Image (cartoon, rainbow over all chains, first blue to last red; front, top):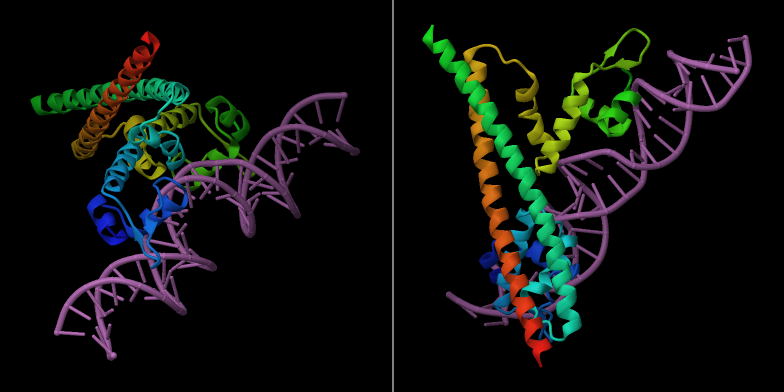
Length: 125
Length: 125
DNA sequence: TGCAAACATGACGTAAACGTCATGTTCATG
DNA sequence: CATGAACATGACGTTTACGTCATGTTTGCA
């Protein structure tokens, strides 16, 4: 698969693919002598996972620190232990974000209710 | 209150205050002839609310579109109705973010468990 | 009144995440 | 084999959210 198809199927631009490649977010496609890059199917999944993590508010830099966990079969206890540490940290982070989110949601709802009551008041007159 | 105190009490830099003022995120402090700006207490709350919204992933541009809702006593049904519409949209948005967050959390946990089981396996040998 | 600390304003700098040319090569189709 | 579409690479541009300097004015205190 060349860069055009990859980009389209992953819903990003070729520029984005090249950029990610340049910063080591995705493995460089094979250059079979001709100069053109060729990518395996898995790269699509990888690009989509990156998108997902971006939507969670992670920077590309942060993503680079965890993306491997999703695609590498880390062998060796050492590696797995490192992975575990990182995952746990991210879980903690996610939990904090969740709490903030939920607080925001609650605030929003109370604001909405306040307004709705006010509107109802007016109507009754 | 001058800019130094305001910045300190809101835990931002004076630069940030001036920047927000320049893009209309906070009302410009009164310039009583001398050239210096003076801000009311409320501006502190406003800066803190901005921080909160930023932490939820809103851009300053998006924040500008909603910050008034927290501090203006929108009078008139029209205004309140507009406010309501915006608030509801943001609630929907927050809900989506929440779902994505929770999914991410779930994924993380299953990843962690997988690793933990693997580690336990190794130990038993 | 002297003077350091605080303030105002303008300009330039910065990091992230690409977009947008420009130029040259490779692919694939009539 | 001609030629338009796709690709490669490099360089410069862009937006966001400020940081950092430089220069000049104001405050507040000894």
